[in-house]
Length: 389
Image (cartoon, rainbow, N blue to C red; front, side, top):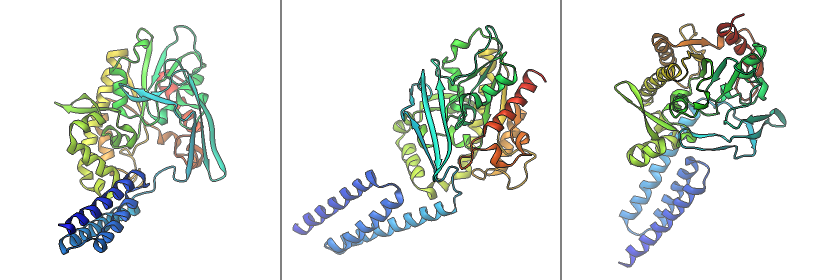
């Protein structure tokens, strides 16, 4: 009896140590290392073969999990922005939004600075209007309006207010059109759709909106499934009879469905678990993504009687093998884009506009987002297609 009490006390202390490690250590790899040490400590401190075997099993499992995750991390491609240090002043420049999860704070300015070593990559100010949109050039009363929705590419991450696509589009049109930039970094088609469904852009009703313009990139596939850490409060959609239906936030769903929440947590912490069943998960994401884009086109017509124009940085039918972002299998990306064409979406390839220029000129160094030059080329193409030469 005394031995059992001693063993229980030791095990309790080890589990408290592991709980503290889970709350404070920087990654699951560190936690696995701590679990190995805890297991070995149990082998030494515990009494009885059964207790010691359990502790040894803990150490063995932690070692296996840690090695698998380390291997998965090594073979995974390095993320964009590695080594880049980005700061926002003020740091809390976004706020909670019940429909979109989060949005830029209205009537505010934020300074976004990025450095790479001792080099300043960019140091820009974002001006957010009272409507929560990014500041654009003024337009004449009654001017034709063009609505831009998107993520950081359309928002203009790393660019000044007058360097974004919507601002340069207005400039290309001699400031005779009104551009509205209702975008935010990290958004995806589920947020584009929810923005129009929720009525947050109702203040645009009655204005002569000529087009809704968005920009899609391969990471949107994972985002519509809520796979990124910042998307817990973002709107979640599920397919019903092929149509996307809003179900609340991803966090709401995961709390109501604990197994789904546990699966998401495991995939977010361990790269090798995320790799299991990845192809099937990507197929589901692609199906949902396509349905959301079709819904966005429908909403543009219903709300504003305007066409949807889709810019894409995405491998298409003309892409050479190995030329695309390999985070998702290229054939799947190509087929997803083909599916959008088949459903009548108007698509404009951004890569064809920038292919003749060095990558260093059309992307922000060390960051990967489009440069002011790239946005200018896209704006010029939009002006030609939507307004004329």
